[in-house]
Image (cartoon, rainbow, N blue to C red):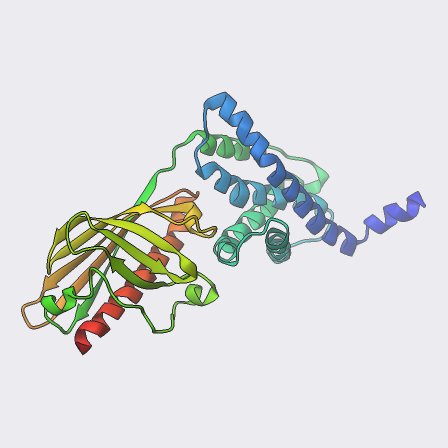
Length: 316
């Protein structure tokens, strides 16, 4: 019986799937242990940065998963392409696990899936060289541990501003009617993430046209941003600070919108350039990767609202 089991686990197909299974089991265990690890870090060096959880879940743990897979695949005749292909299947399994057991949302999974794949694939390549010729070479392990520890104590205060412009064939006075507040947007969203479930903007309301007035930016699914007008120059500028951000489980839990602004520029030829800007802070790491998504989402929100204002002003 024992000999049969040994022969069974020596089969290439069994070792292949064992790498997938073991990788995801180790990943699940590390996810469960991450809160306890954060507690230890807090006791040692104070509260870790908010980016640490993101780094652990979407970089550190997936790299470890890739290393575990590589250990199971060490006796297989794998090329580099085989590692990348197998890592893709490993990533799909990890995404399914996250969706059904961790209840991660669709938008979050779409955003993190490329990063998850790159991390798992990188871990498998690292593991390939760690376990080549059946000899464990652990020189790279201290480097991985250093990266995790460094991120735990490093501050993450990534901030950015996204600005977009739309030319409107109407005078600034006419455009201004729809800048502070605008009626519901009836056009169907075209941005693919809006179609996938990310809530698009619908309407903006205001308590008054003056400095300090309350403003509400309304998105689909009942999401409302409470704002306060902090700069107000009629027919020229409105700046509003975000005083309350809804606790939406996807995206918004990983970033903080700080303020927004609309500027009107008279082009002197009967047209107006509408300039929209949004300031935000990211709480996830690596910031450069997530900002690729955040900036595009902010831009699509801008353009949906600004094109709606353009349509209203040109039809007025």
